[in-house]
Image: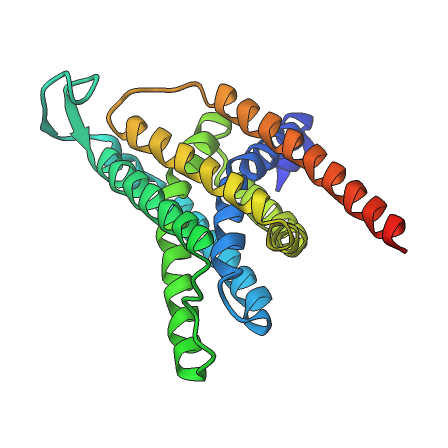
Amino acid sequence: MEIFLHAETWLALLTLTFFEIVLGIDNIIFISIVSNRLPVEYRARTRNLGLLLAMGVRVLLLLTITWVMQFTRPLFDVPHWIAEDGAISGRDLILIFGGMFLIAKSTREINHEMEGEDELSSESTSKKVNVSGVIVQIVLLDIIFSFDSILTAVGLTNEIIIMIIAVVLSIGIMMIFSGRISDFINRHPSMEVLALGFLILIGFMIFLEGLGKEIPKGYIYFAVVFSMGIEMINIRVRGKRKKAKEEFHE
């Protein structure tokens, strides 16, 4: 506990917590979207359970950090036109398949939104199956996103306890705001489609990262924030026009 007497420890904790929240934005968007497919009474519990599982996965990986780092060792060689360094590691395979899963899932959700399908029946047995399916999807994506989180943590500090506290704090903050994010996305279908497009972009970025082709994440996050800002303005404009029309007809 002596490490908490140093200012550097608190700075590392704040910095790491901030990065954990930033890296978890795409995760919480995915959780919000898939949980909105469930009946209302199941959504909050599923979101919180998904985030708790995310915390558990990340803490477990931190506690086995030596084993996790072995995933960066090359497993087999491939042509350089496939992977930049000519080799594929366990981490690369997880990122490649994870990126493909995220692209496929987000594309399917966009199709669901366009077609107006209702995949969830009102039968209670179907609800239970769907809740289980959503939780499985959340766990799979948590594992994928956790690798970036863990590698970022290792790069900022060597103290496992600081990494774990940062993960717990970031998940706690995300749990507080996840309901608001989920409700906002559910109320505005255009924002949901934009968020799904963002997840497809993230999936493609993860896929390329698995092949060793680095894309500056700052550009992508800037584009996403800019696009969402424009859509927020559009939502406000549409709301004002709708209100004006209602007042006119009255």
